[in-house]
Length: 367
Length: 216
Image (cartoon, each protein chain N blue to C red):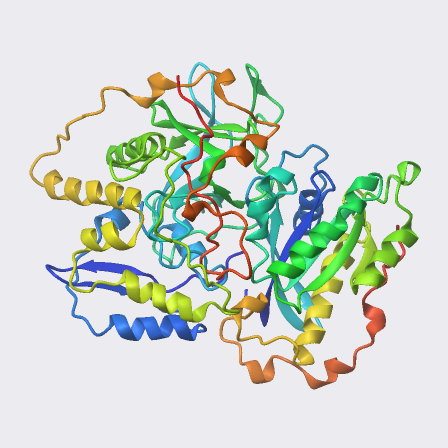
């Protein structure tokens, strides 16, 4: 069980200043960062992403906790889902008290696209709001399988067509996004389809406690992951010349680079959106920019224009479209950009895990 | 629950040797005969007691398939212990140990404790690697060795706990800098380092480690 929930990280936005407050008592380098951050004034303005349950949620708290301390400077975009089975209607596989937290982040904050997917089984207490993320009342992500607690899925051995229901034996996992395909499966029922390169497929319905806006963010994310942003390229032949992964990252502790990276990521005179646009993944910045924009407009009008004509669910690939699932040798022929180096030489900073490859691989073709 | 230390473990070895099953047996005390390929990393955790100290084991179960190998390398960093697993019924998984060991040595702390595990000991009739061969390999490379069965749970507890004992012993000997996160050891919340290591424990016998309990 994750017993040490970190102190809450808060993003406070003012006109020209940003403060990110964290406290990791046992890690001096992070405390030094804290002191640096405290030099700048703040306004106490709530972050709408937190209210929507897409920022600073359970996954973020867990991976940024001292126990994991993974990707500490990367924003996590996350939501709670219910794993469902495809039938005439979508049917929940687990008890209502069990949800799945799904989130994306970047192993290195300045990557243009997220490259990491988190999945965690969450067990909620009876009557607890399942988008609630206050640490005093939040559930714990238990690093045990759901089955062990008598929460065996109703349809463990069932099959839907040729697709076996996806049951994850362990409660928390990290997947490189290049091995995962996310699709919008049912826009009205707010269902995403997640397929791994090993042909595990699961359907995840956004938890009803999340407002519709949150599903729009997921639609946007799916589009970004499939098509990239205007600033990114999906052409593997184009090599990125600037080094996003420090080449001399062989410091045993990695602390000095960590601090340096944090210093680079900080621009205290910028707005939150600008900060994320520069220091965080561009794609996540886009999502969060949408979020903040929506928050502004929602007070005046609840109507948000639906602008996606080519909805992703209409672009479901045929099962044959996957180049290879069991034999994964297609990966070897791909020319990697600098940020996709997979063969680290020497020790890598723990906080980076930077060799987890980016999401821009040629893994999925859409017809 | 509070703990004195958190140890990061990594489980490595060829695909299909039973890495995920070992983790499931250790954390959940159950065996799942059919298991999907692991992609990326899956996590398990369990609290154990070593010399009266509560120690949390955070276990990273990695993908064994060659296609994921380069990504698996990125997980070695910051591991205090590694379980290097082969399948006693498949000779090739034993032959690949050297390659796994090279990866582990190259990408992790030099003090990382490595436990060599010959899994599937319940399949004695299909044995393809003699126990003595595993012992010899471990001796040659300075590893601890055990044969286990994730199916019957034989020696599974011992494999994880003996690894923890060896890490704990190294902490007491001052071989691990517990303040350096890269060593895969974290001091538990509200723990005082000066009281977290008992002096008497340093005298514990080495017979607690390195040899299995004989159930397999």
